Length: 140
Image (cartoon, rainbow, N blue to C red):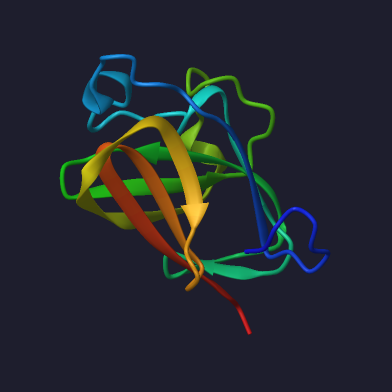
């Protein structure tokens, strides 16, 4: 991953950041149900190179990313569907890959849903005290 100013990008994620506003993560992103992974439109994820996303190969291109929350792991879904509002019209036939990310708990509480990448190119989702991580590497 790189900053938006760098021309040699690996991945770009476009998403909306919901607030907890006194609600629980589990009420907004229920376990076992496909979630848009943010607010409003589903997450758009663009890979500028072929990658290995959570252990599975994904060709460079623009995709939609959904998740299915769980207590110990979340399922990440990369879909070839585009311009999807929420997860209401999610179509499993459009799945490119499904992979699992490990759940851990933070001591601090994140009010805003956040997607970041750490220095090892691990995708990190954080919200409330929930942190979910998934490795991302280049195919080479």
